[in-house]
Image 1: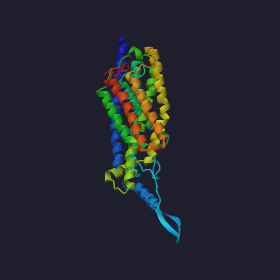
Image 2: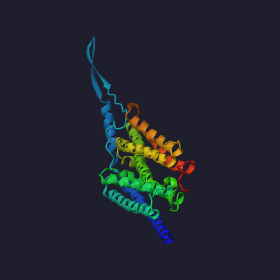
Image 3: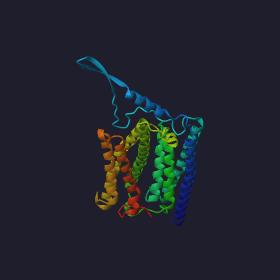
Image 4: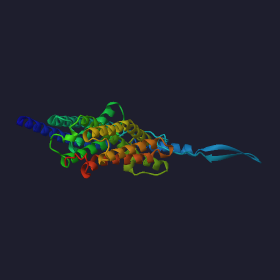
Length: 360
């Protein structure tokens, strides 16, 4: 028994070393992404401004209207009215990406992705070794949940890249967030490896919590796309109205995908993951029935999970309603993700509930 305990502790220390190593590599990936944005060409910008100028000229083109009067037929010029009721109504090209379409910038981008892959492998190994050290699912407390969450988020991002999707623009905010998440996990949320409390000792831990982690990772990517959509949409609006954004804002925002592309990406990932989030809540209710003898007790975690579900349901409904597309729907999506974050951190740390397993 003593030997087994020492072996477990040794594996736990190995897990910590792997997580710290991944943080070091993520830092290098962060710097490489910064270099990609900084050294990427700014000469490629201006396509959005040119496209919107052409659209403005076309919108203002006169439409010949024949009006019959007593003195004959008079030809009047009436401006064509063009409205934009939702995201995607503008025909604006996507930006060239963080690299700006240059060889030097693209090189830094490729280095950043390679470092992200290495960091992901180290962090994933740390999660697996932690699981082996405790011989259970590696998400029994907030530290383990956080490390697993960031691992899955990076894994989903890399899966998109592997599938050929143009999502490298997520790289910098993703790596930045992962470093913050791991920093909080290793300093404020760290918990020694230990066995589960009786309520968590169930096969539902593998089902319910793993789906919650996966859903959260995908919802995070959707939130990043939504936030960037709001910035890019404001930029396109300013250009369409004849404004002149600052050089720095133009350099960054011009290289992002078009607002319509960002909006479409966010909608698709949120819509795709929503059924799985629904299953997560149902699975949690079934587990609660087994563990506590009731399926729903209005516990804080249950309530905020449901609030998050309502938030995303409202977002999807808004997207299907003509008057609530675009920016209004995006605000709802960000509020819904804010509810998820409070459910993730706030309930576990600040609220006393049956689900308070933060270990801090």
